[in-house]
Image (cartoon, rainbow, N blue to C red; front, top):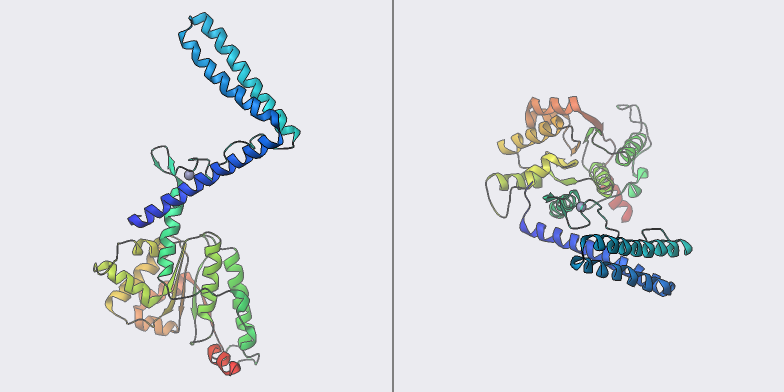
Length: 330
Ligand SMILES: [Zn+2]
């Protein structure tokens, strides 16, 4: 994936800050130990001296140099040995004085051999998703403020259960979905009237999955299609990164499908997203006011049959919760 310069610069700053923080922390530990154990300063000096002395061997005859070097080596190892004993005396780990980098693969330089280290790529990816997410007008919700008491507990004969019971089951499913989310998680389709909590639950899942460190794109169908269209037709500040993110992120949440202005482009884009992500085994969550018949009429049968065949489908029932909330607040 290609990133813009701004993202590269931010990533480099993060890596530099990491490295400096690790080095500062080691310095602080060294100073602490120095004040705790006066012997330590002398032993460190002894180690430095042994290395300086060793350089003198350059001017010596080979046999003489070998003996001299061996002597300096023993001197150095002895000092190291005594430092370890001092650490042990204070119940400190053997590597207490060493710099502990966050990424042992690249020692927080961001470079592994002759390529970018995994840690560097992770930072780039996260920055790109943060940027994509910040374009979203949707705010995260949590499961904690999902109110089941807004749903009626009267049995609805059409469904054979009360809206509260149905929504309680869906809520539990969503919680465990979010808690155990991985690449094998199924795709979900939430459908039902406006104001029944579809957006609330899909955003609650998105929030938890992001916290677990996965890459998530969440946005309304209208905004997703707008961004894709800008990219496709090269308008505005589009830089070609949005489509790969939509197709490759760990979880894609498309909110309010069907509310967008429908064109040939949006219909083809939806099929491409649904199909590509199913083929790559990547989970997607779609919420919509349309029922299956509505989806088929609007996006053709090839879209609806993929959704029915591959998505876990949840029908939200009840009365508009947003309306009830407003009425109760009055
Ligand atoms: Zn690294």
